[in-house]
Image (cartoon, rainbow, N blue to C red):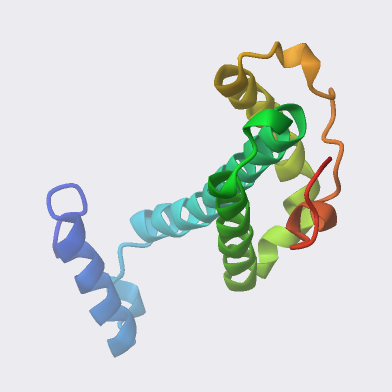
Length: 142
């Protein structure tokens, strides 16, 4: 058996071959469980990261009207597309959207403060938009 810690790629290929062959008793169950859990967490982190970037740009759009430009609009559009794709591939994340939005907004305020020079307190304490608004292609805050 290939050692998980010494050759991760080789280990993944070996585990896949064992699964395909139906040799379930030969699987490295402990490490397989860890990897499956890690994959789920990474999808959740990707969703939260994309949501944070989108929120930062929506905040910048709202609070810096004199700096609005095509680049920000394209970033907003791109993040919406990527978020939609993540959710289509991972519908199990939908029940967690409220918590993810809350966490992403907290970080977005910090990042927007850094990028705009505005105090964090200048932004609403809670996200002023629903997830549906944020994902709506026609929505841009005024």
